[in-house]
Length: 276
Image 1 (cartoon, rainbow, N blue to C red):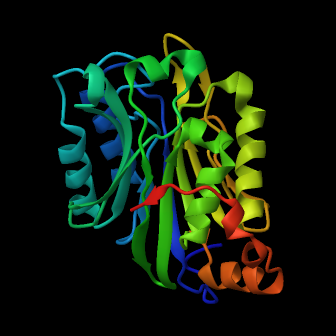
Image 2 (cartoon, helix red, strand yellow):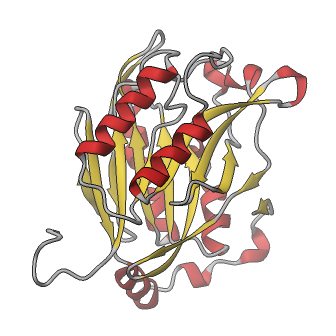
């Protein structure tokens, strides 16, 4: 939808940052993010979504000491443009000398709204040996032109575990924002899983992925957004870009009212996990 169209109705807007993550180079990666933001014609209140571990790449090594602190850099970005920022980064201090793989959501004033620590770690890549799993789901209430949106951030491999998304949806989530460093050979899985998460939870899925190559894998980008109906309605391809996604709260509500599958869930059959 063209935002200058006379028929335009203000909606929630996501800005998905797809770029080649420089390996273990925080300064280079934050320079890329700020460059893309400066050229993207962002609007106040947009929700920026960055890839998993977007300042270092999907590494099993501790983040380098050199370069901007991710929270400080993300806060500066949020304040500079008056936007929400979901930044993927590593956090030290987990048990056993490990780290957490984190998605931190910052408000437009630069303050931290929520932190989600990746619950499902990618054991085929030995992520579980170097990172500790998170224990709770995070929910963020974002004021948008068409009302308050409840957003649940997730990370990459989490897409394969539908129970997380179901619990978040039952806690009121309208949209799932998934930052990833998903390898190209399994790209069809990512698409299928994201569509399923949208359909079964009658929610938006906004999926961000990096491009380029790291020492272990090729990444094809293909950031996209899925409507509650399961339709993929925005796609980024395989080049560096900022993909804008307009999400419609009224359409989501109407879809859930017309086809009340989410209301038919037998909650007693679902496990529990903390929701913050």
